[in-house]
Image 1 (spheres, one colour):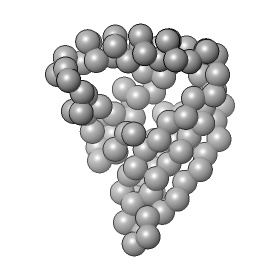
Image 2 (tube, rainbow, N blue to C red):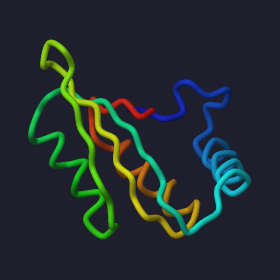
Image 3 (cartoon, rainbow, N blue to C red):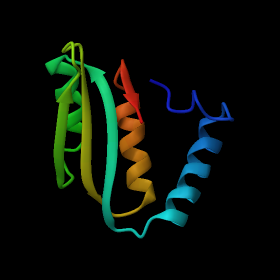
Length: 101
């Protein structure tokens, strides 16, 4: 999933620079940051996402869709700065069929 699909720019560098600016303006790092993802209910995909958070202290909430086809993940992770948030989004963005909210 390409995180810049819904943005007004198609340039990843511009998108992430803008995201960093917004994160730094609205968050007081270090802090717990809430990441939200929707993924097909596939244990392998879920494991791939969890691995991105291996070196981060986090709590996890997940919920299956009504028909069991998808799982929504809410991951509250302790991050040090906006760069770490962006790095996590970039790593999860490499996993196919993950929707980032």
